[in-house]
Amino acid sequence: MNFQEVMALAKRRGILQPAYEPYGGVAGFLDYGPVGVRLRRKITELWRKHFVLGFGALEIDSALIGPEPLFRASGHLSEFDDLLVECLECNKLYRADLLVEGEGTLDRRILADAVAGKKCESCGGKFDVPRPFNLMFSTSLGAGRGTPGYLRPETAQGIFQAFPWLLRQNRGKLPLAAAQVGRAFRNEIAPRQGPLRLREFTQLELEHFFLPGAEPEIPKRLAKMEVRLVPVNGSAGTETIADLVKEDVIGSSLVASYIACAWKFITACGVPAGKLRFRQHGKHEMAHYSSECWDGEVETSTGWVEVVGIAHRSDYDLKAHGKASSREFRAPVPGTGKKINTWLPDKGAIGQKFKSEAASVLEQLVEGAAPGVEVGVSGTTHALGREYFRRVSATEPEMIYPHVVEPSFGLDRLLYCILETTWRSEGDRGWLALPEMLSPYYMLIAPLMARDGLDEKAREIHAAAMFDGVDVFYDEKGSIGRRYARADEIGISRACTVDYQTLEDKTVTIRDRDSTEQQRVSIDSIF
Image 1 (cartoon, rainbow, N blue to C red):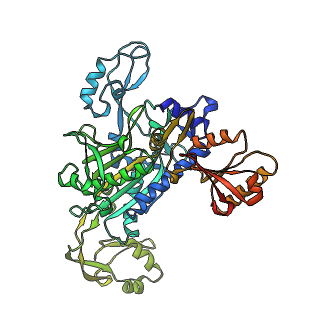
Image 2: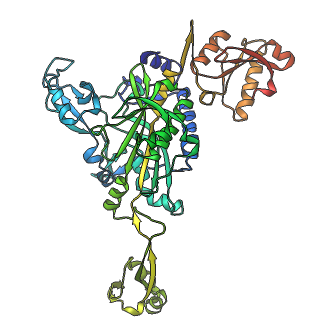
């Protein structure tokens, strides 16, 4: 199955279609239909099993729009761009790396030189000098001119800015994993058709924080996983994750853990292992925050499609937000500490002196306040002497910025790859051989014919299942063969047929999608 066939199936069977179609569509945006919504939810639930539950992650749902200082600190205002080139003749705009073989793996200077020798595919004209184009969507926060803001280009920054809060929820302990599912927005220069390069897309992201020198080891359940890697220096090979770390092919045990977990998850989604690889980023391809990065890629009719990036982001993000916000983004190092003497307000003495104004005085005494500090009370300034403070000794631990490893999935791309790689055909028959856990509906309910009480009995079974929370699909239109075919095309794993024997002995026919084998079972046993 190729790209065009996948997209035709997706539109025909209610999986997805271009957004705003009555108005001609808008490139880079999609609408998901009844089947697509279910498939996305099933994929997300499976991701939660492997990553959220598998690593004990806290979950967060952060805001879609952020203030300008957030993205200045993260580097997105200065670093998050692609090279844009314009034809000097017809003024058509292109993304520079899509004009040159090698795409994002090339150094920008080399890329600019390569584009200079290209001609516009529309008119044959020459190109202008490539220039950076920031990919974030800008907006304004508040009435009038407001203040600058941006739609988030990734869900990660929502987790990073919430790290101090999340650390408190985790009782101050590291390591700490935090996960988020949500929309992200990038103003792509050249969005492709379908879900492979979108301006609005869904990410499944996890940030795993740990102290330097205390990186979590590979879990036993993942250590013997065999994965296929394409390192920057070396050829593709298949080895266990544990061996790849020992041989220093992968430089981080946590990166290795997530590569193994991603391999397990992607293949559990039905993608054949033979069509999956993890490719290491070269230094020119690396994001500004990464010290090591591997892309999980699936081989499709359009080439290798990245569905997950696993990056070691070191302490870049937390350090940037700590400096920009003046808030504490560091974490204590267990077993370390130094003794310090500090002053604390004497609430009793302050209460006796200032009575009803005592609360106002205490609010003015910020951390580190000492004798001699001045406070304002009813328009008068008072200098507080030693009698309003008490000297205490305390031991403070060493504080350090944690490091973080991030596995980040693109749900839309992953769904496309699942659709293409799980398609099977045999003669005139075609079906999505989805794993049962991804089946968009638990079962097709279909009367053999829409008469003689068969349809009434089928609707009764359908209603009972829905009432019990079982998501089943009812279809009585057309021949039973056509209904089986429609169910097969969206990957429903089994079909329940109500026939004349059903009315006699309360049994139905259950048909398996992949083998097409059928068996009689009692109605009471189908759910």
